[in-house]
Length: 312
Image 1 (cartoon, helix red, strand yellow):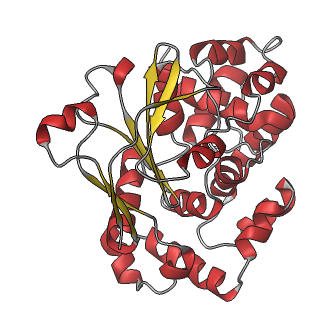
Image 2: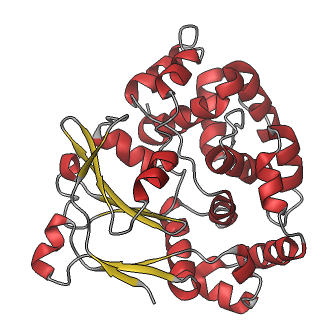
């Protein structure tokens, strides 16, 4: 039976002080697909409350003048949030190690999104999210995962107040559903997966679930491998190509040398680096070579800048 809890008091979250724009870009800019802004707070981005779910955790965060604050209706959320947001990683040092001194476009991207970072999400959930991503926009991927969680994932808790008057303060009642595990996905008929708006992606997810059911521990082993070996294994899975594998390794395994290449990155490197006509694999190789062992962080800056300012 799911718990019925009230939100805890707001608590400071030291270690990261992003602007509202950078917070939005980090949580809702294509790394993760399970964060939503509270409908009652979106009119004021500086006070916007974000609700996020991963694994068995439910958390809200909001910007404050002196940094972020967070709260949760569940115990033991603090260490999970600490890991998820990479608060034990020196992102300033990583950013400074990028070749921005000799790369004026990269310097421009870093200046536009100061404090941008990479999330560290559960590996299996990251794989599921990016298997849903083919030819879809962020909002559509979020809808697919929400349906999968609501229809096939366990109810983790009920939180908040049922009083509509409190909705404007982020206290609207909500239910938190965990995404179905891969072992549970293996038991769901493909037609039921398609009913979650997955389309052709349902077959990839069903086949991947069957493979993982037949190979216990395979995901854990893959996550622990070095980047190249882990990528070689991931692209054996149905529906996992170079880009999906790199996204899963970057956002779900912390492999910072991964350099995902999608249409945004093809545009970015064609326009800003003269790589017009290059194939994705060539662009990815350039990215890892030019930006170095933290290429994935550079990729997120380039990606964010292109989406917001690419028309310039």
